[in-house]
Length: 122
Image (cartoon, rainbow, N blue to C red; front, side, top):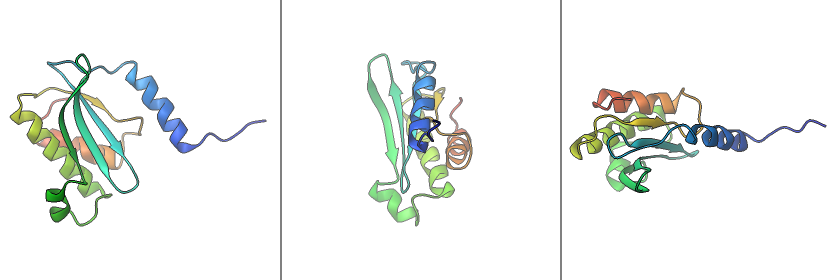
């Protein structure tokens, strides 16, 4: 009997397959994105030392004042721009993009466009 696999389980499997291939280093850290139904989280990770270098989300109080809704493409683009600005301040220009098992469209695409427009290369 064929059973339907839940959407979250498919996303988790895609992310696990991708994580076997995508690794962040000190010179080129991993830009990881996670999206829930209401919020978007992004972090720059050095996998060799297992350290988070930069973090940003729509839960931060400064962003809540700027963004009316935290689950839209506009919010994702703003998060991408802020993460890129923080990364450039710390000296990281090139990153490896980890879309978190999500398909590359919608909010993930808007996030990537925002990060690229702010100066990150991936």
